[in-house]
Amino acid sequence: MTGILKIAYRLLVNDRGKFAALLLGVTFSVFLMVQQTSMFAGMMRKASATVTNTGAKVWVMDRAVTNVASSIPMPDFMQDAARSLKGVKFAVPFYSGVGLARLQDGTYQAVSIIGLDDSSLFGRPELVEGNIEDIYAENGFVVVRDVEFSKLQSPKLGTSFEINDNRGVIVGIAKVPASGLFGIPTLYTTFSRAIQYIPSLRSTVSYILIEPSSADAIPGIKSEVNRLGYDALTQDEFIARIADFYKYHTGMGTNILIMTAISFIVGLSISAQTFYTFVLENLDKFGALKAMGAKGRELVYMLLFQAGITAVAGYGLGLGLCAVLIAAARLRVPDYASVITFGNLGLAFGMVLAIAAISSYIAVRRVLRIEPFDIFRG
Amino acid sequence: MNAIEARDLSKWFGEGQARTTAVQNVAFDARFQEMLFIVGPSGSGKTTLLSMISGILRPNQGTVKIREQDIWGLPADKLADMRLNTVGFVFQDYHLFPKLTTVENVAVPLILKRRQWDQAIKEALQALERVGLTPRANLPPQKLSGGEQQRVAIARAIVSKPEILVFDEPTASLDGDTGRKIVEFVKREILNAQRCILIVTHDDRIFEFADRMIRMEDGRIVNIEKGQGHA
Image (cartoon, rainbow over all chains, first blue to last red; front, side, top):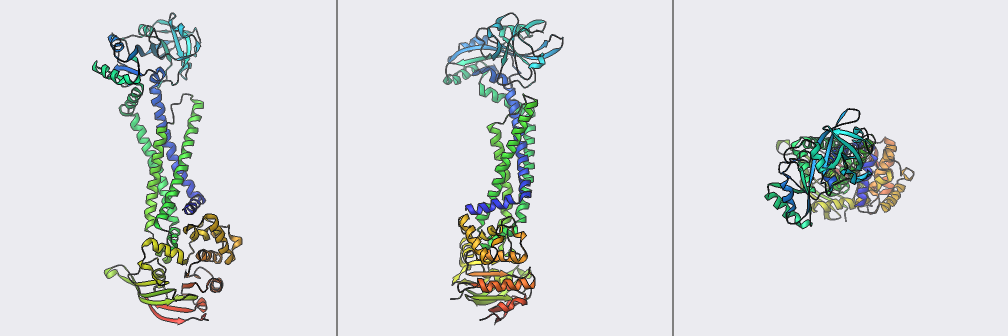
């Protein structure tokens, strides 16, 4: 069998023009599919940045919350209720909001403000400059050094600014695994200062972060919180809810889906047409092989092998091209929202296999129909 | 034992008023060490007859026996195996793979017989040596002349040592002198006591090499005669 596949391989790669066209089709298709889906994955990662950066195992929130940025404040008693649940090691309040900072030169800049529990500072970021205790100092804020950092005019320790006519001072500079989706800088402070500086409703707690005593306790906690009229989600569940929101309620998911489908169709069109032309040009040779004694299934193996080689090579090239593009984009935009996940890879691979299967199916039908007698008749 | 026994062979295409009879009630034998020509004008049924004899076109009626085995009674896979092991084809347009080298083209039947690649190439080189094309082994077929391509096709047909060799219009794409030389070469070098060669042609310049000639007209055999090449 390997000999036949070797012939198939040589027939394919020695026809450089056709092989290049086939590779181009699949590569382009894979590139577009991976690029689109990785961009979406990147945006989803950013949309869930607060959740992943905080690292809480369970998040308690209003049932109507669809994403981390649109929190609905809960009454303070929920914090006490959460603390008293069975299986809860500790529960702390968490504030997430947006404010307007007036910088030293008088310009204004929107900022994301995270308020951490005053006593534990649970969910605090890793500091690269300053001491975390200084967050308790008067007007203390920790700024995240990410790509948005320069929008605050690259503050240093001691740099001051204003939020709602309240003075703020940078007491620490931190780094976080992921920065946010909306392109604004992030400031951390204590929960009490956050609700003092940012205009709040009567209820002030955006989320309650729960540390369960064990993983087994989580279902019970969820059920109890649910009974109180709120949702308790694990980190993964919250990230999934955020992703669902962007996928199904913003049009973003639909657009990505359409682009991915178009990429698939483009790849399929180019590949199927080129592969069919390749087979048509070699049809008499396949007929001659049949006349010589090749069985139908052997010809099918040859075609599937050729389609498979093209698919795998195109997949690799497309993936490589996408990785190069993302790397190049990050040279200019360090926080470029694109990430290649195993899910992207799997989806693209599945679609490439579909392209190969459909292309070879059309070719196989044609080859199986050819009669060796036609070769004699010319 | 005859190499081939064809009895009452008929083939028609289409049905009803569109039915065309290509071959009608043909019967003949072919022997080993015989170069048998099937001649006749275009449309007389030569190629259809050759196709039925070599196992690539099922007759509507009649039997074909090769070494006393009824080939059309075989299941499809066995029939393909029979063609692979027993029949060598030299097509009118050669049908060489342009993207394979000459030696790889010759090795194709051996590859189909599941021979290891290196072994197949080795045997293909020996076959090329027989047709005098060793120096051309690594060239693609389109770099060869028409006569050389014909010899490559012959090497491919004989590489697996088949008992039956069928040639379809072997001189149609060649000039007269080259055509004669090729058929002369085949008669001298390829024909042997374990082999029968069938040649379909209407080129009377090569009739001199025939041991016997079957003349066809309108799908029927009108005459079977001894050829000038009969020893």
